[in-house]
Length: 238
Image (cartoon, rainbow, N blue to C red; front, top):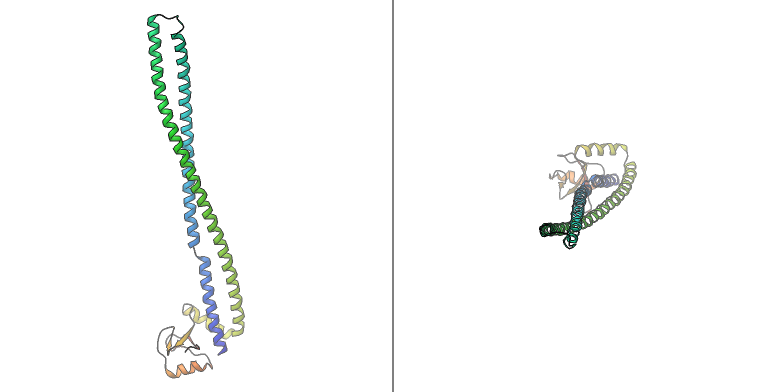
């Protein structure tokens, strides 16, 4: 009976080992990390595109401001000529016409400069938002990676402890019974030892003969289900 109890406990350890190994191989946390990495990559692309747009706008703004400065210089020159008293009426009219044209160009340039400045402000605000999102996602990724490493470490330690317990039990059970258990385990999808409850084998759910039930209850030796061939185990609550 003691050997059977140990065998039943060993099977529980085996199932625990399988569960831990499944958790160690689980891709859920890694999948979540990959999703965050994709978000980070997309944000970096957005940030790069936004910076390029900012660069282009600054270049346009600089050119417009240069044009405005050039027009202002021309305007000052024409205004000086207009009031220096050295021009006839026709020349004065031409100068005034040029001055009016420059002022018109300046007005248009000022509107364009204002539009560029507004657009540049929007781009800079968008850039700040992208940077904040990028920082948030990076923090999220760092936390996920830390949690993953901690969980993997804890599971690895737990797995080693369970394996050591299994090794000790295996030695106590003996080679012959372990070989039989291992063979059944492989054949029966990891379930070699099953409980006997209310006269039924919990492996295949088939009712068992009264004599077999009594033999299992006594626990003098190993008995198997007549249908599925699994080792039957009598529990205290039976």
